Length: 303
Image (cartoon, rainbow, N blue to C red; front, side, top):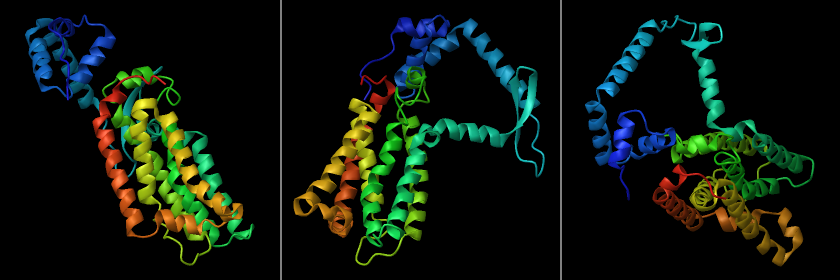
């Protein structure tokens, strides 16, 4: 719920294009969710002759650019015009898509992707070369829910973006960008793990290959919610450490060798309707916390 409104002085300076850039960013972000202030700012801008002239100039430039946009060639993909050092040139739209994907997922271009593949390859190697056989499925199942957390931890914040201050203040930043990058992480994790389960030896009596999805979603939402207080990287570490303790401590109470046979632990945490129902409830609570704390991602991280 909005607890403050844009002052009349800032509205006037924004309409006159004399407001500092940071104040303008703050105002533009605020009016996305405040109808009252949006109407005031809109009215002030319309009342300023200078601002109206600027808007007309911008509108004319946009329309001229749209008319000059080259039509796509059949069978040759989509083209667009970009300004470079040597003037205007045409490039394929696929390059633009590639840059968008590159910006959407910092984790995908860092060491996290390599770590994900390393975990999967290690599980396959232990199954076929280490004598674990079907137990490798249970061990991978215990690790799977926290694999997205590392990617989420490096997807948003000071540690992920050199320009985090600008991104956090921009209208396209905040929770929207964080969720986009989280979706990119999950979009890589799910297919890679599905492929791993397809090649691992079958195990008798263990949870199914999709049993980790609800736990993984719940832990990811918990990290995002906690990240609104302490930052995404710290939150991911805390949640991952908590999951590691929940998995390893009970096994150590029985026998250290029980860690190599993760089936009993996997059955305890993943198998059956009560376990999956509990994870679903945790996911709902995590999503509710994220909704309540959504505005916290509009500000700079303090830790």
